Amino acid sequence: MLEKTEFDASSALPSAQLPPIPSKRYFTIGEVAELCGVRSHVLRYWEQEFSQLSPQKRRGNRRYYQHHEVVLIRKIRALLYEEGFTISGARNRLDEVRGELRLRDELQAVLQILSQ
Image (tube, rainbow, N blue to C red):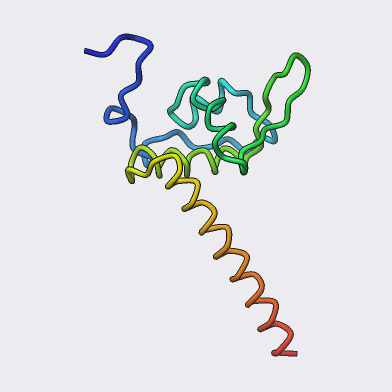
């Protein structure tokens, strides 16, 4: 049996059941934890493991996440909890996706030049 402080990934909400992300500029760590179905300490740990995740820090080292970071956290969560990736595997997958997006953008730029 799990203690209150432990987390069982198998009991986590599927991504499809997470609440919608409100349209606001900044989110506190507590809001992000609620929106993404993870605890605050997990978010702080993921900041160390995923270089793409770096919220702004303000007074008293309070973290403020932007919309794109909340989306990224949900992607990390899905990779780890739903697709079964390890931290290292999820990091590699995010790097692959970033490379694919960069390549797509470059190809679109070339096509735009050629169509002129």
